[in-house]
Length: 145
Image (tube, rainbow, N blue to C red):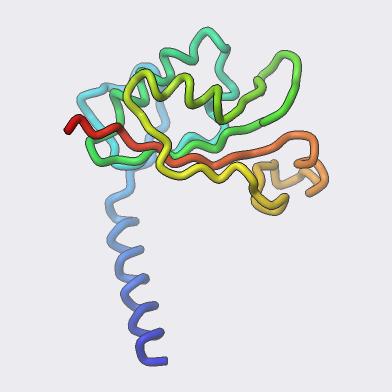
């Protein structure tokens, strides 16, 4: 139990330190200065809202904004057939086809999420995820070694 308490204290200290170094940026994504790079970028259903013609620019900008050793997390949603958008239909292979050519590799792919962990608006019934799936993918820049 003492080790457990120590672990919780350490986690609390680590969380407080991390919170003091988190920047939340609200701006035009495509106008962000690539000289400022980020250790973590969280794309939670942003890509699916973009017109398909902007997807290549999205991938290039993600590459420019991610710091060496950083991590890009993507919530790939909505997975499944759908006409039009936004949100436009997504898939892990589609996101892979955008990110791999600019230097990313998938580090972790969780594409078989339980219904409770899939993306949905707070007001949506849990059953809403049965017709549109979600995957979580962690991306890293490929090593140049």
